[in-house]
Length: 426
Ligand SMILES: *[C@@H]1O[C@H](CO)[C@@H](O)[C@H](O)[C@H]1NC(C)=O
Ligand SMILES: *[C@@H]1O[C@H](CO)[C@@H](O)[C@H](O)[C@H]1NC(C)=O
Ligand SMILES: *[C@@H]1O[C@H](CO)[C@@H](O)[C@H](O)[C@H]1NC(C)=O
Ligand SMILES: *[C@@H]1O[C@H](CO)[C@@H](O)[C@H](O)[C@H]1NC(C)=O
Image 1 (cartoon, rainbow, N blue to C red):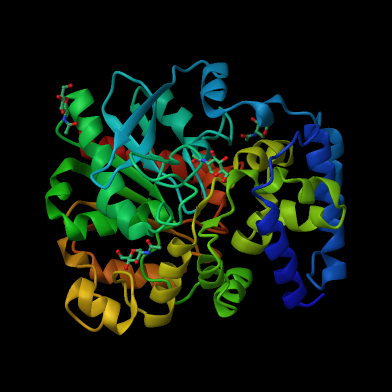
Image 2 (image 1 turned 90 degrees about the vertical axis):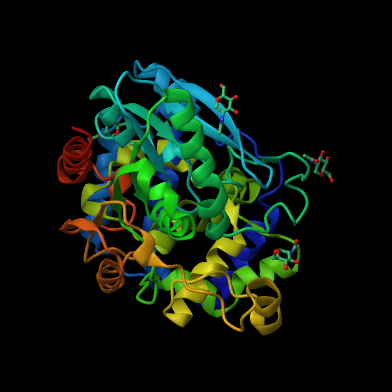
């Protein structure tokens, strides 16, 4: 099957993803679909060793298959595992109403900021033994979970409706410029603290660098910033599928035809995914396998229905377009509106660079050589541009999503996160 056909299918799926979703059936169906889709990979020219398929199939058989957690929302999940949950709403200067989630604790505040297409859910769906939010909460921290504008929890605005294309006229520049500062001010106000610790995953780091370079006063509100799989420079993106989407101008086309929202939560549960057998492949794998790459050795198969039912959470096509510009230019800079647009907006032909030398808060960078998104070379370039890198740590054999979903993520990554937070708050 050619990539062109794959694109057409994706396009159709996307078009119909707005159709009212219906029940996706049991968790067992999800696991079965997943296994089937893996079986389909070789026929699509994607090479998967047969032994891995067998291992996956066995794992799925042995695990109870049905998983209630797939059908609980974040508040129900957090309560189920014995923690309190609060939902706060924060209005940004430009009118977006963001859901800010909290697992309250007596300790110091820690803000966790999700990646592109994700939400606060992704810091809990790995379950009580693995997820970062539970781990920090169990250590007494006051855990806050951001939701960037446009994701499934933060689809409100004081005047705009998500139906209007203006609503989705933002990239991670605005997330760093408005959303993160609004969240931080809100948290410090509620807790009466001067500073918080910040853990960013993927785009959660991009937004942080935007914030601190545009508003350096926010550096003083951060004890330490821990960057998991950071993205700023992006020239070495590996993910072949994302590169393909960039090449065919997929996101620009979507924007032009008035579909500026990408992969809202209903995507996986849309009828086209559940009722057309051939679509199972696309629906269950596109997000993970094709887009991010799977770390199959550390995959928790029982947990897949939980992940698939909470992810993706939607974003704006413009976020991807902005990343594409960074990829092409090799420069970490503001959105490129073309010569005239740039002159009008920035008073110069090219967009201005973000001034990374203003990011003076202590930053810890965690990367892996097998990451399909955050490549070592790009992270190294980032390190060279940041004035206060306090930790530069390689995690072996981790792909992009492993930082959230891998079975060994707690010993391999989160214990170090906790150590760093402690080191800078005592
Ligand atoms: C979006 O548009 C649909 C149909 O055009 C309408 O039924 C719905 O109420 C709108 N939603 C909002 C939030 O305005
Ligand atoms: C999006 O924002 C840019 C920059 O502010 C503006 O030039 C453009 O007209 C906006 N587009 C829409 C559809 O609102
Ligand atoms: C801080 O809290 C007070 C009282 O709860 C409120 O009046 C004020 O607007 C808040 N400030 C910010 C920046 O949220
Ligand atoms: C794997 O997923 C299952 C089902 O959600 C969960 O009970 C288990 O704790 C997870 N394993 C790890 C190591 O997190």
